[in-house]
Length: 107
Image 1 (cartoon, rainbow, N blue to C red):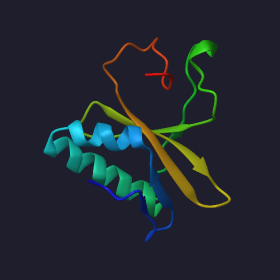
Image 2 (tube, one colour):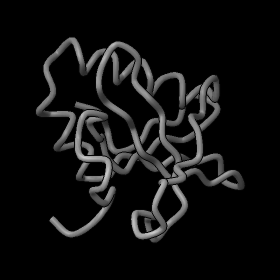
Image 3 (cartoon, rainbow, N blue to C red):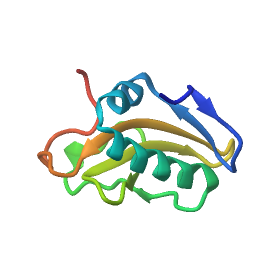
Image 4 (cartoon, one colour):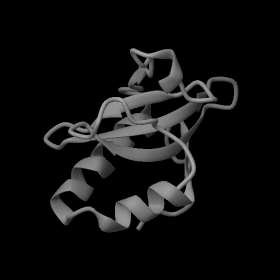
């Protein structure tokens, strides 16, 4: 399980409680691919793309980015702060899920 922060690379990575719980539930091979993608984020090698949903009502209250995890159906959603070089990992989503469901909301 990841620490709350990792800061050895170019970007400081912070994990929300939600993504920590989600990571605990994925199978080991998927976890390894997710960790690899997080390493790319940390090193600034692939910072994903801005999340722009097709419908305005799906837009989260905060601007966020997403990074597809190769070899899985998972995406990592995160907030990027250029000034502090910090990425806050918000949650994992499954690309097979209903595209009309809200990304972040009450659980």
